[in-house]
Image (cartoon, rainbow, N blue to C red; front, side, top):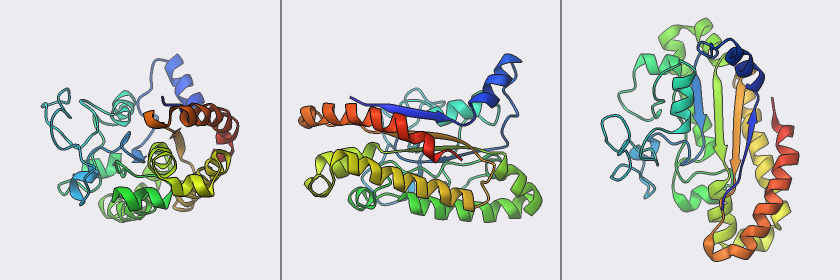
Length: 250
């Protein structure tokens, strides 16, 4: 069972464009942060067992090759970028041969297995969201070298930002391990993850993304061997996120 809550801060902007049948050129670039639902291949370049660089991944992707995406084809972030006329796919920032075009139009910082709970990435040995922010700082430096400071600021402030998380925090840190359940009730752990997410968005805001259009996705996927607990948690989570996610909008 899974649930997802979507906040579209860009909803009105896209809806207006859809009414005129023109949704291209709404955003200057796209930046992706998160976990396996968003990782386009960053884990290929780190030492972790969480990799999608082998079949059957990539069977429906152009060229039919595994790219590091945890999908047989494109990710939602790729589809959004294509739909909005930005580019066909969003490459991983850690890709060694990333082009200046991709630097100008946005990159992907997500890492499969990541989460907003520090314990999650300690276990999965992937890129924490805090380091994804560090890579974003490095990206900004390169962008300014490519296009100059003024144009870099325009690109960043006009970008679409996608943030995905929560799946691994609940699956790994809460349901699979007893330590978080011993220290947090379901409600308290949800508060804990929400606070982490708020801090993450605030840090993005401080890093010049003051006009960002945010797409925030928080997921909690539950485990088969915890079915009763999972059903209770999923029900509580739907109520909780539905009432509280609006608080983190920029």
